Picture (cartoon, helix red, strand yellow):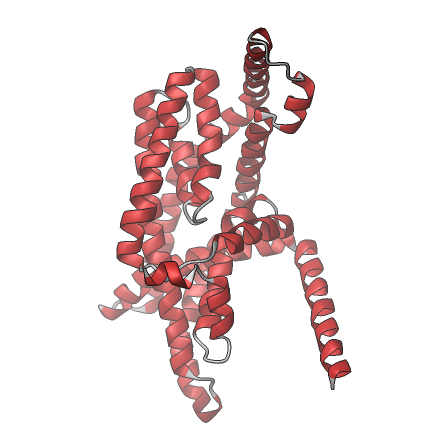
Length: 342
C-alpha cells in the first residue's frame, strides 16, 4: 500500500514536470491566451450588466470590444512611445547609475570605510534593476503585438461565457455541481473587479505624483504600478525601484526620496486601508506563495508571467476554495489565519 502511494506521488511529480515543460515550450501561445482570459474576466461584470438590461449578447460583446479597442489605442498612444524611448535611453541611465554608485563608494573610501568597488557592483548593481525594468517592458510590448489575437480570443471567451449557463442546464443530471461553479465564478469576478479598481487608483496616483515631481514617463510608471498592484506585498516594491532609480539619475537624491514616499503612501493607503475594507482580510495569498508564484510563472512564461503570476495563482486558490475536499489546500495558500482573525 505504501509502495502504491509513493508510486502515485512519483507519477504526479513526473506529470507536473511534463506539463511545465510543455507550458514553457508553448509560451508564445499561452501568454496571449492568459492575457485574453485575464481581460475577459475583467469584462464579465460589464457583460452581465448589459445583458441584465436586455441588451443582446452579440451587441454587448461588440460594445465591450469597441471599448477595449479604444482603451488599447489610448494606451498605445500614451505609453508605446514611452516604452520605446525608455528602452533607447536605458544604456545611458545604467551608465549614470554606475557612475553614481562608484562616486558613493569612493566617498565611503574617503571616510575610511574600505569597500571593494567591483565586488559591490557585482553583488548590488542598481543598473541591473533598470535592465530588468527594460526587459519587463519589452516583454509586455512584445505580448501586446498580438493585439488582434488577444482581442479575438476575448470576444470568443465572452460569447462562450454568456452561453455557458444554457449548456450547463442542458447537461441535466450529468452536470457538475452548479453551486461550486457559481461560487468559483462569483469569487473570481469579485476579486478581480475590486483589485482592478484599486490598482487603477494606485496607477493614477503614482502617475500624477511622478508628473508633479518631474520624473520622465510618469504615465508609463503609472501603468507599471497598476500592473504590479496585482502582486500583493512585493509588487509595489518591484514597481517602485525603476522609478526611484530614474528619479535619482534624472533629478537627484531629494526627488528620488519624494518618489519613494509617494509609493509608500500608495502602498499603505491602498494595501492596508482600502483593499481590506472592500475585499476582506481573508482574501489573499501568503507572502511566501506570492514570491514563489512570481518566480515560477516568471520562469515559465517570461516577463509577462510575472505580471500574471498572482492572478493565475489566485484563480487556482479560489477554485480550490470552492470545493469541500480541496479547501484545505486553499487555506495553505492563503494568509496567516491568526492575523486574519485579528
